[in-house]
Length: 411
Image (tube, rainbow, N blue to C red; front, side, top):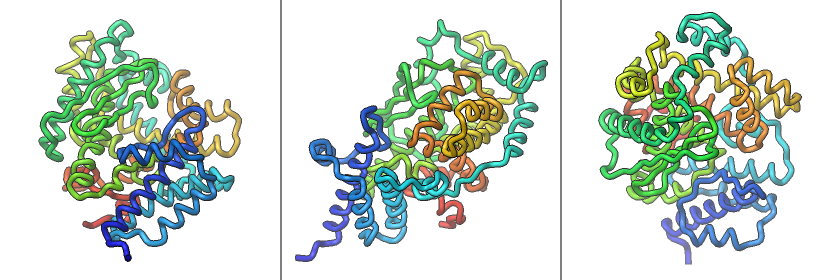
């Protein structure tokens, strides 16, 4: 008996989920890390945990079979094919096929990766020079003095969850009013943990519950409070997970959204939106004004004449330094050379350079790093449009690819 269209779709999604779970298990290794956000049936996860891990070459063949004839309408098929190509590239790499990093990034992320000219970073440095308080010292010293001026004192770290929740309330209200309606009753908590993805990570638990995890091992700059919370929360990662669950899974039955492989094209746009998130809901100097009125007075932080919005724009551009550093590390450059490059161009201190080096030296994370700069770059031009909020709404509720946006995506 011939399978019906719904049966074919369900069978394809099951095989897609199993492939992602198997590859994630192979990538995790003894460390237990993950590059997969999975919301599908527990039975599928349990099946993969119980089985003997298949050879990586067979997983690549499984990806080829999924790519033969995705049983979906063209736009959805194109989106899913891009995710499967990323899975196939990872499986091939696990099988010993070591493509150069730019080629591997293209296969996984769907963007062209090449070394950026240092003149781009010089321009970002010029913007920082103009935006930071005037004073003696190098640009590196002035940036770190600005950070220190706004850093939450160690004795006040216990207040950070409350500050994050206050910022969540504001970013969520602005997202709901200007960008997209959000469901009532959403709960976003905050936990300070010994380690988190660099500075913070937003995690959606499903339904209306989420948590922002903040890395307690790093100093927290209160001038970055809204920048971090908008990125991890609203209209960034938590809002995207929540809304795609409601619009795609619950609303349209697109159960493939259960599977979110993190070294794939969709996350390039997720990280790009995260880096633009504060500016979407706090245009101009509104973030700085809100922090001045609602936070800084409590901690004795006096105005210093800096321009937070310009500082954040410049620092977004400096994610390109991390991308270059990943390429240098992949070329086999000495660790000291890569660290010096990060310190020189990204203006990182010792702690920040150490965290960056750990990222660029980790295979999956070095690939993921490209998503920050290239996602920011792609969305910078695409969101520069009179209907910016409608475009953000699409990013939060639709399955889009970097290629869609780079082609203009006129829909």
